[in-house]
Length: 640
Image 1: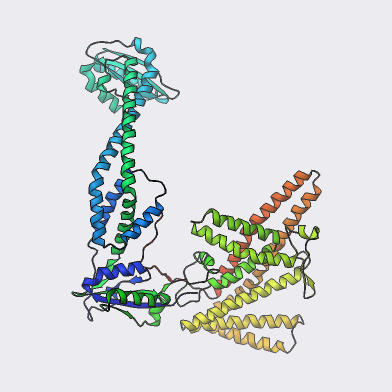
Image 2 (image 1 turned 30 degrees about the vertical axis):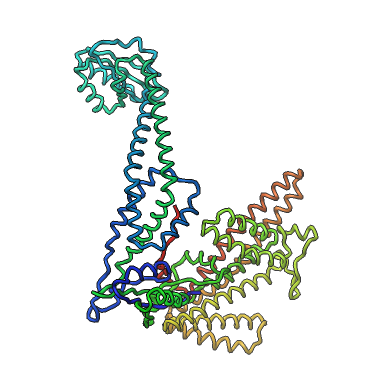
């Protein structure tokens, strides 16, 4: 059900403003409204409160995040961080901001310098590896490269698919150097070619400009490698790489030491600062005058007493909390807060598929918590399948404890498995007819009918249609209540008319089938006439058309029987396969596979059809939606 909401106003001296905001943020029950918009300017000149520190806090968070980028994470920090966050709860905003600045001052440049140095060393190693690979590949042609004083050696890498570019480059270098150059090329790997060009240093700028304009990958060896033999170059590369790697290891140890000292406190400060930023970002909703502040919003009735007591104890009468009277129009726009018992809460997940109910509407979650498992159990109706679904749901909850949507769906399946097992006992089904064929159980005989689903087709059909009538009638009754609550006469007439007309049709059918006494024929006609009048008054011609749609809605509940019958047939086929296939292991494998497929279908198909019966057949009789979600002003747990 939806919790009753109360609009409140908190007023106090300006000097207590930040402290009051902190208290409200910790309590976490107020859905804030724009205070300045609720008071007319002629009554009181209220201005919005400006978030003066928001940019400072955001700047500090950017610096902290940049430090985190350089520090390695410590192992399992959650518990330590949680303890540190709690220790910061008693500190003021200014104290937290001051401490954050101190930590940043101690760490920022040290961490940045280490990270920059590490990055340079990693780049150096990457470049050295690249030089080594190229030199290793072209080492065998070293004897072909002339060693001349005043000449430069350059290496370029070309993808084999662009091999023809080498001819163009050779021709251009010929023009630049006046044919005073050497040009040798060799394969580096399956995809690329290395070209070695030897030319006079006086053409260096022009040659390198050519490489740049041709967009080729030039391997420019460091100056200290120039003039060395390739074997000497490889030794120098190996020495330089080893030294760089050792230096990176040393930097990593230093960063790990810094992380062990500061990681937990930094994490706690970041969490606290994010809360502060989130808190002060809402300041525009608060109002202030020269000497006082005003905060308005909505609070669930169940939390109101606690809030009053907390403000009274913290501020000793300096801050006043007042309940405001609201008009029906204002109440209709109050935020919506679900407050259901544990067995209903999982079904709020399905309410996310539609718009939130309006505050004045009846919450359909409790009805869904009753009818969804009933429909599911009626369609699946098998003890074995119910037990498997129950086990899978429990396993899913244990496997994914932090995924809220998985937990909700698992709880729905756990609740739905109970009527599945009960109906399985009534129908005498354990993995189809396996239980009956083994002599373990048999369909129950109730009201002179043996409830074997393969035989009791007509009784089952009548039962599911009766359930449809009850479900649709319940939707119409809720629609009447909603119409009375919001004082919408036309809607009320339409719902009353439809209820009366459908009831009249049932009476007339009962008389025609000799199930009901003939005297009710006149009652049926009178009720039908009255119902049509109310339908026309409330919905006009479309109201009468809607009546036919409602009758179709009721008949669509026959799917509860049809889907159940399909599941029974597939289970029986699986059991027959076990007995008819010649090889035992093959028959058993096929039977298990078919049962597994049927269980998967049993989890999805009944769920979808049960949802459809609620969303289309049931909700259409009363549900409008469009409510405003309740978003309390409080700390929101962040997942990193």
